[in-house]
Length: 213
Image (tube, rainbow, N blue to C red):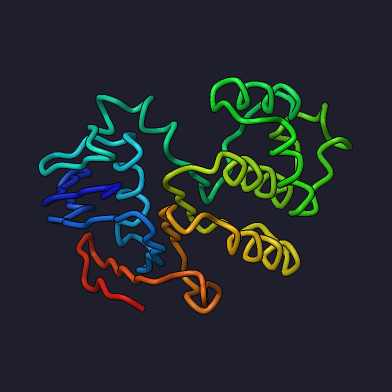
């Protein structure tokens, strides 16, 4: 089991954004996580990543507490947020930092970027935050895939991509290791046809459906 969540409750003010959530993510799971806006999907992911501390309940990632051992856990997870962070350093410096901290080769990132039809060399000295929305997303996808993590979490990863970019992304996903676990937060289940084996549906902070597909 990669992630174990038991009776997770997270409050913001008087609102239970996560309301007694219990969920297991196992090796090889390819999960489509659906639900309306405000259902708690992103909050759940941020709790798994250690950004939020639960009010009650428990989360373990590979047997570790994501808040107390966040640095170790983040080395095991590739995460693509829905909104790219406003990173001000250049692509060249960012690649150098990622290669150092994640122990991956620069060529791996460059190749994944090429597969996403992003020319890194042409933009190597540009600050990340000055790239277009689509270019930022392609670069983050390239980093995530190059890391070859145990767990991939994609939060609406194609939101800023054009149709060709989405096609390239979904084609690359077919090459992921079968043992890797993947969580896709999406509103479009049809886009993930053939890429998922499980559906988890959240609504008002609760898991209302969890089934094989």
